[in-house]
Amino acid sequence: MPTYAGLDAAPLHYDESHPDRGPGLPPVVVLAGGAARHPSYLGDLAGLGSRYRLIVPHLRGVGRSPEPPVAEVGSFWRQTEDLECLRDHLGLDRVLLVGHSAGTRLAVAYAARFAQRLAGMVLITPPADYLVDTPSDRVELIARRRGEPAFDAAVAASEAGPDLSDDAAFNAWHQRAAPMGYAAWGPAGQAHAMVGRWSPAAAKAYFSVEPPGDLAARIGTVEAPVLVIAGADDCLTGLAPVKTLATRFPAGRAEVIARCGHYPWLEQPGPFRRAIDAFLDEWESTEKGPRPNS
Image (cartoon, rainbow, N blue to C red; front, side, top):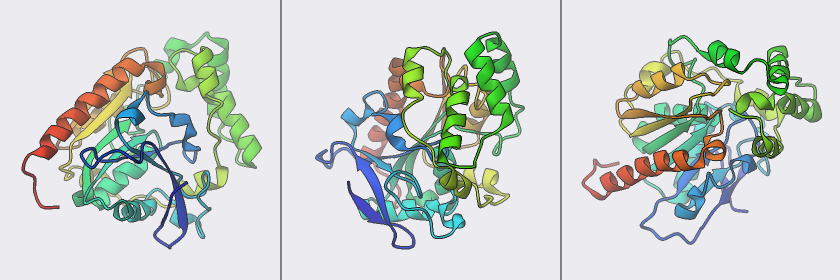
C-alpha cells in the first residue's frame, strides 16, 4: 500500500485503483466519511474506479494511517494540509476531489483554504446545516418511514447518541443506527452496513477544531466546478439543505437521486454514475481548453 508524508511527516496510507492509468486521465482523490470510517465501504463507487485512477486516503487514525500526535492534527480543518501534501506527492498542479458524507467537510475545508489548488469537486450526500440556513427537512423524511420496525429502532439509537466508550461500543451503535442511511433496508443495505469499521478516537479528533466563522462566505469564492449529489430520501442529511449548498458555489449544481438514501452508488448505481460521469465529462472537456495559470 502506498504512503505519503503528511503535514508532520507522518507516513499516511492510501489505496489506489488502476495505478497504470495513462497521463490523459487525472487521478481522483476520494475522501471517506463516517466520520472516521474505513474507506472500504466506498467500494469502487459503482465502477468509477474502472474509469479513473482513484486515490483513497486513509485519514488520520483510520485504517493503516497512524493516529494524530494531538487531536487537532486529526481535525478535518487541519487534514486539509495533509491533502496538500498528497497533492504534491502525486505531482498534481490541482486536485479533483470526491467526498462522501463527513468526508465532504474535509473537501469543503480544502476548497476554502486552497481554492487555487482545486480542479473540481463532487460532494456526495454532504451534511450542509453548518453551511446554509435552509431549515432541515429530516423530520419530514423520517416521518415517511415511520412504522418500519428496523427503521424506528435506528431512529431511537440515533437520538440516544453514539457510545464513544470504546471501538466495539461505537461500532455497535453505528450498526443499530444503520437503517436510517438507506432508502430501503434490504439485503444489499444490510450487507453494506457491515463494511468499514469506525474509529471513535479518530472521530473525536475529526471534530476537534471548529472551522472559521466565515467558512460559508469563503466557499462563495471557490471558482472550481462543484457537483452536489443528494439522496431524495436521505434521513441523515435531509434534502433541502443539501440542495441549497450547491447554490453557494459559483459553479455549483445539484443532482437529486430518487429512491435513494445516504449511499447513492450502492442504492442507485445507474443514476449515480450518470450524474458523476456527466460532471466529469464536462470537466474533462473544459480542462482540454485554455485555463488560468494554477
